[in-house]
Image (tube, rainbow, N blue to C red; front, side):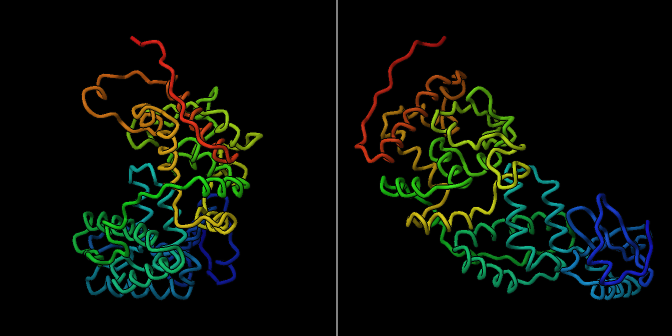
Length: 381
């Protein structure tokens, strides 16, 4: 454990290939924990129960060296009078929640927190976060990203705070009813892109994000399913979405149409199929990319999830039977039939996706739509 007189210059310039704690000569127990991805303040001390404890209370440079030293002295005085120090920052709680949470959208949640929440609330002790601060945070998100994004962020912050409340004797969430920006009745969407809108989006869908949008239309996949897709999940024209990433918790095989395969970036690079850094991390920054596409295409007021609804509508228009279309989207067929019929319908799904691709091709080329009736195949035992 290196020990030295920490300075602003050192804290700003220090880097590490693996995690290292640099302890401050000036304040006992204070250390700057440096890792390849971030710098965090920690404090080693003896708690009220007589046990040695390590507390993380923020990141550098959000909390400066002087502020970190002052915070430690404040916490030390609180201990001397028998009060537990308020050291649990909102970011630390969020990171612990993400570490323990078993959710398929973990990467999306982390990106939302890093982009929209941490800059305002990350370094704040969670016990000190006030309702008015959350309101100001939501106001800023609504102004920049719209009310729906503000509500999604609110839902995530509420979930984390409620999770923390179940693990704390004293914490009470400052979030109350009525803070949402969109009424539940207004939140349900029925948006389906028109043929003209599909043509405009398709014509202006360039680069990695353009390929990604086209892939969503051709497969009906959810944004998170496609954005986190890896090359290892694709084999012989089939994309197997593993149970760990599937909402229904079972493997889902999607036979990719030729048109869908043509949207995949070539040559293959890295781990992730759709990526802006050579496959090291999945594509992100959807709001920025979509704003650019909206401006170029002139199509607005739709979400990426609306592409999934549009794909489903186009399948019906192309004559794909309802059961087959629902299976293509990964929906579970209910009732006794859904329990006992375990046939994967690979051939039917493959044909359905080709029919969807044909419908989109006719729209993009400006041809009138034709309804195609699926041929009956051999019965499966």
